[in-house]
Length: 427
Image (cartoon, rainbow, N blue to C red):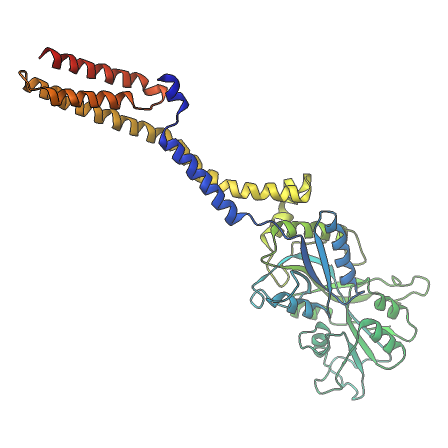
């Protein structure tokens, strides 16, 4: 009896184990979402600094087995359109400050700012003074997105008084705009480009081309909070020829690394690690460790980005290969709610079992008391029905499967049944 009772489990325990297993399976199906092995970033024009940065991200992420496809676009506005379009290919994008807002793009979140893109203004000859008249034949070249009202070059050209009814600016790629200015086919070029852009260096060194001295940068920064005031040191482009010939004050939006909200958090951490490796060094306009920065910009920071800037990459992702860390993290996310539900349930099983056993034994004792009372009330018989009831109680008591803690109680019950049986025999 003892051996058999130890081998067999009570029904409540089996039921609890089955419930926990089913719950675990359901939660795993609902919550286990492995990150994709391929994601797409909308970068910028092929060959631009933004595109080159994205290619460096791709190299870093490839080490962890994630393929980053770099998508060539017209620029930040095109990147934004790709991200906002539900049918667009891009999951990630590089957006300049002032391009959008959290209200206009609720499906996007930021991973922080990663580099500056100063607004460069190059010209030939003299520029009209602030508030002065612009010649009717003045020719301006902007970037390829210059025809769009949201283009930063167009916005700030209008801010310094370029008339809306003047000759329409030409939309040229930076290299073509630089060539046109050098050849005298345009009078002014506005570029929103990183320091690394080759056309910027070309125009800084070009004879007959000047970089505009921005006289009211503080006013621009005050009016447009997404701008930052920067200083271009004298001679930084060419020390021998002293280009530029004076310190130049610039204004620049910061570029943010942006993702769709649906992008897996593990991929977001991987992107932030890549951005730290690519942008973490010192540069002309930045100190070492300045980027990536926990700055909202136009969009709110994602939860993964907030965690990264506070605590760094998660422990498992720092010390294990990417896919193993992701699997263990996902498993932990699955097990936590299961354990949270199962732990109090499992702790309650012993109490439930004790209550259930007490109920069964008390029920048998109550029936035995009824038989004993009947024996006392019918000392002269008949007793066949009472004997049959005692036999039934003995069978039920013998067939009870209990743990060793309740064996003594069962044996006492069987002894008491025999005691009532002996009284019945004597009567």
